Image (cartoon, rainbow over all chains, first blue to last red; front, side, top):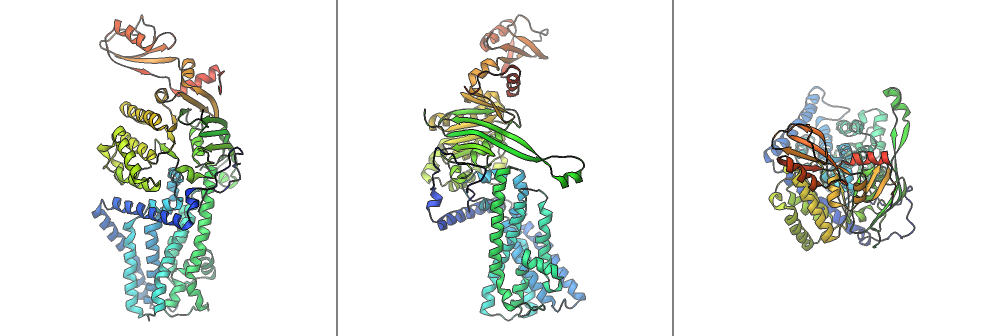
Length: 299
Length: 331
């Protein structure tokens, strides 16, 4: 990722040719990535040290997050106390979907929350500083708000997963064991990419949060339930446009040995990683474009 | 003379801002825009090792220019070259060769002790360990960092934070340093310390410095050359001496008398323009009397407890340039 491509409005000075090589270009791409990744780790290590200065507050934060999200989980159980099944799905299966979404979403909150508050970064001029450093902007933005305390919600997800597995007696296979972490990781990236798109919007507007929250928070809530119970346009939106259905429902069909009531072929369950890669690529392109717009508008 | 390190030619930046007409709803729908020429075709060059003051009233285009020189903003027109690079196309390469300090914002990590921020920046800029230690030792000494090196940045005073920010901006040995209002909000002692440091790094390391400021005293202490910008145009580019002789001719001596005297004070080569109890403001012209002569004259007649000399504000100078015109533009 470079933001140094030719820009239309900026003619090259004829007198001195632009030096075509730079240290970071000379070295292979992989080593650039490695350097930036190790910097990212240093940044977040520093942030964790900063956050750990207030240990008691940290622990309280984790616990309260766990409890607040635990209420949501309790809500599902209360709901199923009245209705024993929903669209043919039992409570254990629903909680399993909820666990998948929650774990992915909560991890994404730990690592990628900074894009949710990115409009503040832009408004306060902090993005200028990011552009002044010889590191990829996205690495710096990601590292700027790494919040370990949000692990409380991950905990809720793990508890939900345990409760779900106690009820559904899932038949484990090697394939399922291997695919589970892939699905969770994909989910983290998918949510992060949605936030990245939302963050990019803050280059133009400060009202972005509400719009994108419909997709993140709304998406989380929605995809805790089997997507087959929704109307067609909702299913299509969350499959093709904002592919949150690939976080839990589609791979969930495979884990739970169910077939889609609407007759989707089995392989759809395995599309999660591919869909994630494509969606992330689109989000990254949009971001890169946004950064260049920022540079020429100076908002 | 060496090849210039900073070249700007007919540099322009035009913002499009939405125009409000009619009610809120109409504004939402129509989105009419108006062009604002923040920087409107300015040209200058800066040679290595120069220390240049870049001044102008608020909204004159100072920050916009600096942002174009760093690659944060793409110019709308004209050309710019810094350290042989095109700032927007080679922004990240350039980043390693410039240091930037924004007086009102810090680049240090808020939660961390200063030393940890500096360590992180060592990795960001890939400064070799030996060089890092060398620089840090030098800066600790001149900037007096030792007393707060282990303190979290959020607990630092403004002056301490600024010293920390200066060290942070210079750790990677940038040949060019941009300073945006480096002394804003600081007391006299802190300002003095920062000016001394800037003079030293300019002298010892040959760092080229471009600084924006509102404080004419910064310019008087630091910069042989100044550029004045207003409404996106360069009003003046030349020696500070010349501008002071022509437009900054009136200074003010503020004295605190020991005993109350009838106002105005008389028999002095200056005019009393304000009185507040024991404190008197005496305006005098550089060409007519030196500050030393005036002080001697005042103290011969009255007892003085304290005194300061106020340099003309940049706004006053810009106003006078407008009133009287300027013959020596881009000399």
